[in-house]
Structure formats: structure tokens, C-alpha cells
Length: 272
Image (cartoon, rainbow, N blue to C red; front, side, top):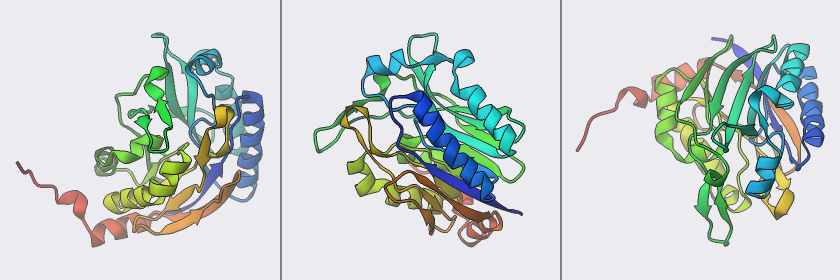
């Protein structure tokens, strides 16, 4: 088992894709210069829009999306594994969008894609309402990615509330599960850390959760506090409420030790 340097990038994305690419590029380059070889960005890396109409007008078919060649070139230039937490601006043929993660290898090639399965359709106690399904189509496939350092499970934000997905990924071989997010402030304050620690403990995986922070178009606020959690549920690294990044050494032998101590992934029983 090996140890890698993993970086969580925390962003405060605007409605302007060019501004967001510059912001993301700066932190990715700094993290790579500090030795990170696996770097992950949040959900909505390239833009945060407020309404369905704004989301649709600032979208592209995958073949034309400007962020894809941009990050491909960057991962190759820096020779790093780069997970773009999501581009929620990928236009589909059915008139909706995909909220899609992209994993680039150090040669700049896309080795895995994941479309967010669970869409954020909620009515929060503070009166905020979100209907992600108005503009996005949910995915229908869990995704594992093989890298040269570990097997990576891919999820996005609201997926965090569905533990069976995480258990499936862990039982299928994941050592790290990524949870790029744009958590709201009320749900982040109440649930973010608790849910991430629970998913780590339940799966015996490292949980890597780069997040959006600050205020975005339309007054939407996101919680920030990007986290990396150990397979034993310990917080290894945390960002605050401002854009930035942090780097943590991930020792993959800790996955084996945690699952050896509490082998719950092998203890499922049928029940009625």
C-alpha cells in the first residue's frame, strides 16, 4: 500500500466561467507545486447559476465544453490526477443538463465520468427551495475509477445522504470516495461533518470532500469547510469559509487496518 499527497480545492464560483477557470487553475497549480499528486475540486467548479434559464443558457454540449480541454491540458502540464468535482453545465440531447464529474489522469486523458445520481430537490426549514431536477437529469450508474494509487469511488454532494451508494462503492473496491459539493449553509451547519464522518466510518474509506464556499449569484450561500476524513472517522484536514486548498498525506494501509478492525462490509445479513 502506498501514501499519496491529496489536495482539496475550495472555491467560491461565480456565474462567469472564465473567472472560475482562473480561480481553479491558480489553486490547482499551487497544490501541485506543494507536492499534491491527486487534486480534487468542488461541485459546480465552472459556474454557479441561480435559475433554470441561466443554467441552460450557460451550458455546452460535452464536445464543445471549454472547461474539458482546459483541465485536460492542466493535468498533463502538472502531471497530476485531477478530479473536477462537477461541471453542471453539460448539455444533454433531452434538453436537460448533466451534473458530471471528470477524472483526468497525468497524461490529460479522461479516465472516468460520473453523473450525479441523486438530485437536490428540497424545501429547507428556512424557506429555501431547490429543484435541481428542473434543469438536470439524474445519472443511473455508480462509478469506480482505477488509478495508480487507489480505487476511487465517485459521488456528488446530495449523494452523501444515500449511504447504500457509499456501501456499494466500498464493497466494490473503493479506497477513497470523493464527495465534491456545494452544500447550503443551513444543511452544512447541521449535517455536513456528521454525514461525512459517518460515511467514512461505515465504509472504511478515506472521504475527500472539496466544497464551494461563500455567496453566489442570486444570494445562494454555500458552507465551505472542505474535509478529508480518515477510514476511522477522524478529520485529517479542513478548510474554513474562504477559497483555498489544503493537502493531506493519505496512507492507503489505513483502509486495510480500519476494515480489519471492524469488518462490517462483510457482515451483511438478510432480514425481513
